[in-house]
Amino acid sequence: MLELSGEVGFRAVTLELLLRRSEAADEEFSASFGDLDTCFAAAYAAEAEDLYAAVLAAAGEAADWRSGVEAGLTLVLGFAAERPTLARALVREVHIAGGAALAKHEEILERLARAMGEDCKNTPAGVTVPRAPSFIVGAVEGVISGHLDRGEAEQLLAAAPELMDLISTFFVGRES
Image (cartoon, rainbow, N blue to C red; front, side):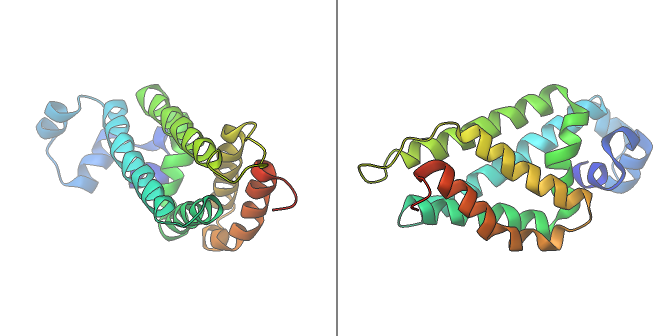
């Protein structure tokens, strides 16, 4: 469902297209999901949770806050560069799908922002407390979305240094 939505757009997905792609029977689909919105929401929730867990794991293995953020950022940018149709569904088509999928999207972004902000508070004394981590998470999502919209997914990893500069400056100041 997510790959198909990323390819043709959520509004263009039909039950017929989805069943053909998945090779599932209509009865199986109806019994499992009932409708396309529920199917998208279930697929979105599973993929978003997996990606969120991978980002936290990558960040958690790092020695310090900056390295952790950089590891998480690199993982997300690499994911979007390698799987642009899936990434498009996760960052763009979810807004069109709305409903439970969009609620999950907002929850994941909030959890990510909270994790980033809480982790930053563990930095050495004298470092400013983050003002609005959700702004940074939204900015990263915007960069990913823009690259995907322009068909420049392969260039996402090249954006990492500039995004890290933005993130570091925002969280710990220009001296970082």
